[in-house]
Image 1 (tube, rainbow, N blue to C red):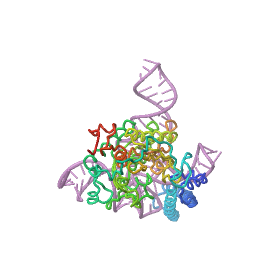
Image 2 (cartoon, rainbow, N blue to C red):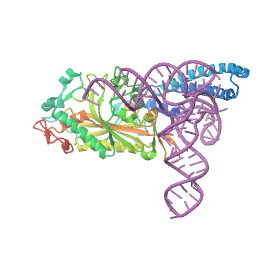
Image 3 (tube, rainbow, N blue to C red):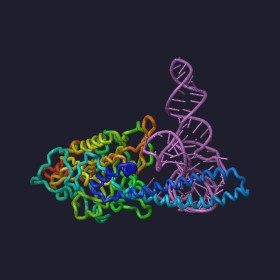
Image 4 (cartoon, rainbow, N blue to C red):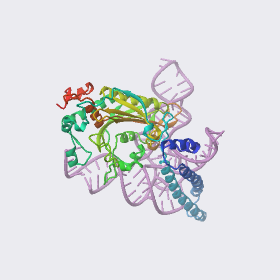
Length: 422
RNA sequence: GGAGAGAUGGCUGAGUGGUCGAAAGCAACGCUUUGCUAAAGCGUCGUACCUCAAAAGGGUACCGAGGGUUCGAAUCCCUCUCUCUCCGCCA
C-alpha cells in the first residue's frame, strides 16, 4: 500500500500516478474514510483517557463503600460509550485500510507514461534474433520435444497445463534450476527452500490478495494458497520484522514450482510450454535501503541478464510503461528471449522495484545505524529465471540442422553431453 | 488423531482484578573512571497510531489472536492459533 501520509498531504501527486496507471480507484473515498477514522480516533481516545483517570480514583476508594458504589454508577455510562465507540472505531479503521489497499503503487519518474503495452520501451537488446530457416520450427513441432515433454499424460493425470518432463527433458529442466541457483549464489543471493503454500496474510502482503485471488489455487480444508511464485513466501520471510541497517541489502534466491490458474487466458499463447499451470522458477529477492533501491534494481536486472548471456539466448529488455505496470510495482523491466522457431519474444524474467509498497503491507522495516530511526525497506524481485520458457529458448535457438539441440557451455556441468535430442 | 503443559519487551523471567507499558537480570547504546584491557558507577534503552506546520509536548493502544465478564483485565471466562512433552499413525 502507499503511504497514507503522502495521500493526505499530496493527493494530487497520487491522483496523477493512478491516472498514469489507468487505475479507477476512488481517492476521494479513501480520503473520506481516513478522515472519518481519524475523527473517531480522537473522540474515542479522549473517552478512554477519561475512563483511565477515573480508574485511578476508583482504586483509591474503599471497595463497596457508598462513594465507591456511587462512582461505579456514574461510570457505567462512560463505559458503554467507550465500548460502542471502540466498535465503531474498528469498523472505520477496517474500512479505511480496505480502501487504502485499493490504491496502486506510484510509478517512478523514469517510467514512460502510456496507457498500454505499445508504450513499453526497448532499452537494450543482446544477441541476434534470427529468422527461422529450414529446420527451425516452434518447439512443439520438434521431434525431440515429444520425447522430452509429455502433455497427454499430464492431462490424464492432472489436467491441461500440467505436463510431465521426461528423460532428457527432465534433466534439462533440472540443469537449468541448478545453473540458476549456482549463479544466484555466486551473485550473493542466499539460497532458500520455501513453503509451497502460504496463508492469506502472506498473499496480502505481496499484493496477490485481494485483487488476484482468482489466479491462485487454494486448498479446500485449510484455506492456504499454492504459491504463484516463490516471491510470495520469500518476501514474507521477513514479514513483521525490523532489520538492522548493517544487514542491508539482504539478497536471497529460491527455486520453487509455481502454480497459476491463468484464468481468462485460455486459447491465448498456450501452445507448448509458453504458458502452463505449473512451472519451475528461480526467484531473486532483495531487501534494500530506500536510498539505493534503483541501483539495486539495475544490478538485479544485470544478474538476470547474465544468465541469458551465459545460455547464449538472444534477448531484449523492456522498460514497462505506466499502463503496463502491475498494481504493486514502481518500476519494472521485462526480459524477453527470442523464440526463433515461433518468431516471437517470450518473457522469461520480470525485475521490479516495489519501493516500500510491499514492505508497508508486510511490515518489513529497518533500524537506521545512527539515531535508531525506523523506516520501511524497499523490496525488489526478479525471476532468475522461469524454466519452461528458457527451455523453449534453448530448443528453438540452439537447434542444429541435424535436429539435435546444442547444450550451451554453461549448462554442461549438469548435463554430461554436448547435445540433446539425438 | 488422543492426553497434558505453555505463549509477557532483543533474550531470560516476575507479575492471579485497580496507580502495570509492565519488576529484576542479561544484551545493546551513551557518559564517567582508567596507560590499555577488564571491572565498576551513572544514564538511556519496545512498537504503532492520533494530535501538532514541525519539533517539543500531550493522548491512546498493544503482555500469542479474537470475543466475553467488569466501573476497571497481562491477571477471570470462552473460542482459535502456535510451541513443547507423552501416546498413536506415518514419509
